[in-house]
Each structure stands twice: as C-alpha cells, then as structure tokens.
Image (cartoon, rainbow, N blue to C red; front, side, top):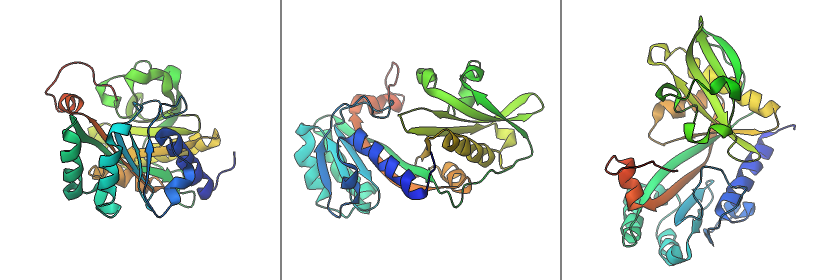
Length: 265
C-alpha cells in the first residue's frame, strides 16, 4: 500500500472509531460526542471492552466511549471544561470524584504518535542492526525487553529490529499486531548503550519495515515519559491523539502494588 500522511491519519481515526464504537468523522467534529461502548472483534487486542469511561481526542473535540451507567456523568464533565483541560489534573479530579462513587478511578493516560512521512527516514547508530521475526523472540521474553515485547500476548509480536554489539543484543524495537491495519512499536535499550542513537535507529527502521508491509506503525507514551516522547519525535513520529481510561479501583490498586494477581490490560 502506498501511504501519505493523510491516509495514515485516516486509518488511525477509523481504528479509534472501531475501538470506541463511534464513527471516524466524530473525531473531526467541533462538538464533543458521547457514545455507548461496545465490544468489537476488530478493536485493538489489548483493550478491555466495553469501556466504563474512555476519552479520545485528536485535537478537535473529545469522543467519550462510556457505559450507559456513566453517560450522564461524563456528558456533564465534558460540558464543564475546554477539550485540553479535560485531560489536565484539575479537571480530572472532578471526573475522578464522580466516577469514584461507582468504584472507578482515572487510570491510563497516554499520547499516541503516528509517522510523519516528511520526517521518517532510516537513522544510524554505532551498532549493527538486524531484522528479527517472531521465531527470534522466544528467548527474549524477559524484563530487559518488556517494552518491546509482551509475554502475555506473544502471538501478536510479529517483527523487530535489534541492535548488536558483537553477538550481544543491546537494543530492541518490536511491534505487536494489535489490530488489522496498525502495528504498535515498543523499544528497549540496555542502560550502558543509551544516548547513542540506538532507540531512534531501531524505531525508525522498524517503522519503515512496517509501512513496507502495508501496515501503519504507531507509538504510545505516557505524557510524562519525556525520554520516550523524545525518541518518538527523533524517529520521525508526531503526536496524533490522546486517550484517558477509567478502571475499577481494585485494578488501579493492583497497578500500584497494593493487590495480588495478574494485571490484565
């Protein structure tokens, strides 16, 4: 598939519409949109659907995908603040207080990046790089590579680029086939090999490999993860949309190390 920036952006909005149970054009409206969340087999594999409260913005408005129980609360919240303030802490306290009455809390907040074809190009670092496939990952499901690979969803890890110092793997970018048209990139670099351009080299090369296979690469980072955001920008990615998800209080406590059992995202 031949890509242009506008096509990449459209594919991302169409996937967000599948995830949120709305229409892609809803993200381009000037007014906010509230829809009832629903499960969809074409949604990103790591999402737990239906949502209780999930906010998405591509910059124009907010689309809220919610349960029927929380529709009124979220609609009221979106009417109180400008779009950007709905994702800032003072406003989120208001939403969190309302959701907490039903044992929910504001949980995940993330910024998503798409490649800018005017900026994306193969970068270089001091180390040899190799293209890797699923069969190469079997011995790499360790804490060293936990951002690049996901042990709970091994079957989705489809492609990677590794950096090698001799025979030693020192950096890894890999992607998961989270949905039909988009593959998500994660990257890890060993501490001794950071600040040498390894992460951006691996990220940019993997993004180009993904595009060659007719898929759209995307990259996710917490807004406060400055190192990861810098890598996205250096690698040729640009901010595209943001998301906020509320989760049960027990789930949040588990993330904070207060509970027991496996955490399922």
